[in-house]
Length: 417
Image (cartoon, rainbow, N blue to C red; front, side, top):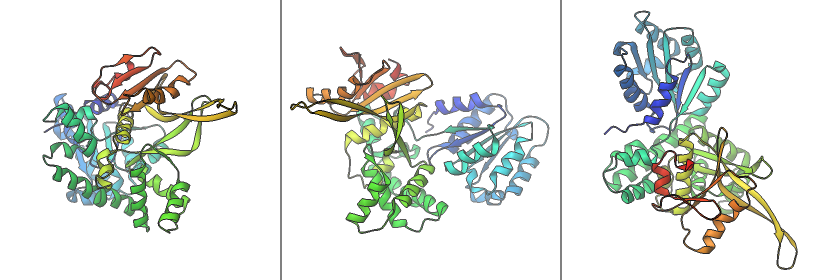
C-alpha cells in the first residue's frame, strides 16, 4: 500500500535545484524516509534522472554505521560522483552524524549536487540550518497522515475511518494494520521505546519518571490552558515531588524539539499582541496521545480540537489561540470583565480566519456560547465554526460560516468557502 503524499511532493518539486539544502523535518515514523527514498526518487527517475545519479544514505541503518563519521560520509559522497552531470543526494536522519553542518557546508560548494536531508529533531536542524547556512537552508515540515490521506487508503466507510482516526491517529504504519490490538500495541511501544527514549538519551535527562508523568499531564490537558508553574504545583501537591517550573519548561521544549507536541500561543485580538502565560499544547499525532493515556480519556471535544489544529498546521497556516476582553455590567449595574476565547486565529500571509471547533451545537445555549466570542471580534475577517458531522457549509444570519468536520477535512480549500 502506497500513500500518495502529493502536498509534500509538490513542495520538494518546487524547491528542486534551487541551490539550497532541503531539510525535511518531522516526528519519527511520520513518513519522511518514504517520501524521500520512494516518492521523490520515483519522481526524479520518471523525469529523466539516471538512478546512478541519485545518492541514497540512510544513517539509521546498521549497514551505514561507518557513514555517520562526517569525513567518511563526505568522501563516500564525493566518490559516488563519477562525472560532471547533476547528482541528487538523499540523506536520511542526519542528526545521527556529528558535525553534520560542516559536511553540508562543504557539499554546498559543489555546483552539480542537489541536497535533501531528513531529521527528527528541530534543535539540531532548524536552528543550525538558520545559523550555519545563512539563508541557504530550506525546511519542509512533514506531519503524520492528514485525515484526507488516511481516508484515501482506508478500506471502509467514512464514519468507520473517522472513528479509527480519532482513536489511533495518522502514523502511516497504522493505516496498514488490520486489528485494534496491532494498532494499540504499536502506538504504546513506539511512544516508550522510540519517542521518549530519544528525548531522554538526546538530552541526558535523569528524571525519567517525572518526564513520563509530564507527558501524561500534557496528554490529559490538550486544548486547555496550562503553564510550567501550574504543572509544578500539581507535582508538589498531588505527588509530593519537587519538579521545578524551570525544569518543566526545559523538558517541554525537548518534547517540542522532537515534534511530539506543539504549542499554541495566546493572542490578544483587540490589543493585537501576544500574551506569554497559559499556553495550549496539542499532540502531533492524536493516536500517540491516546496511547499514552491507555486509550482512557476519549473526550471527543478535545480530540477533534487537536485534529483541527494539526490539519491547519498541515495546510501551512500559523495558528494561535485568540483572546478577547469583553466589558459589561451585571444585574446590579457593576462593571464586569470577561475574557472570551477563540479556539484558533489562523494566519497565512494576508489571510486570516477565526475558527471555533464545536462537538455539539444542537442547543441554543451551546450556539450562543460558540458565537459569543466571534461576535466580539472587531474586524471583518471570516469567522468559521467547525461542527461534528457531514454538513455542507452554510452562512447564518450573522455571516458566520458553519461547516461539518467531513467537509473541512476532505476539502483542502475549505476555509475559503
